[in-house]
Image (cartoon, rainbow, N blue to C red; front, side, top):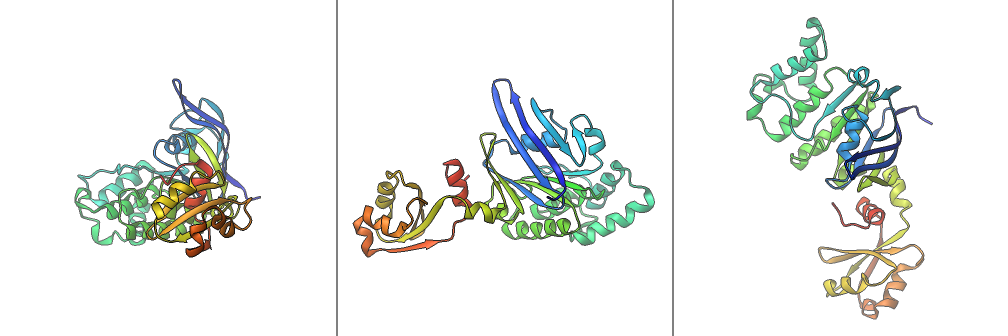
Length: 308
């Protein structure tokens, strides 16, 4: 088994009578990109804060990069980078001034700081923006700057809390290419997201709901082992058909996608197309196709809830 960057057992956090994270177990191999997928309020950010030592758990044990957390949180801070959901750099400073300031916080010597800023500006396409005030930059530009700042001190482990929630699809795609580059260089990355397409890019994934992990593993493995067949139906009257199918206990979910109805049928029905036609004879005249499961299907199957 790969050496672990993060190992947490029985991780629990309560706020009064409310349990935000409940008995969470987590193993993240070094050099991997591991994702937390779940809706807002499911406990993703609370878990990240516990793993970084910013928040003490009510119960459980945490080991991050060989350090016991929160007892050794101070030693951990120089080994990790953290990119918050809300942009947290100084908008009245320039790009260069922000990067220089972050470098000084991490104790980079003066002779190393200037070439490191230049290196990051080249890597994250910030060269032409170095003198620009951050407050006038676009969401995608701020995102690149925030990532550059988070890796200024070349951390072994990078925590990203919904880092792409305020940027356009192209910026999101470019951002993930940069994450893969970091992973290839040996950086371990833990990222929270509520985007299905981002979760599918991760090497490993935990699906969270109400403070608990409902499914855990590589995305492809989760899709293969979800215990349902997925059938797409092309026919008229999809709304009424959906209402009828959802009454059947063998149907996990049904969702309309344009002119098709996507139906999840429990795997006990080994021939889902024939079974569906038996339940609704009108489907004899429809087009039914068994399709590959998606991560959204895994989420629905694991949590019993629609896409976040």
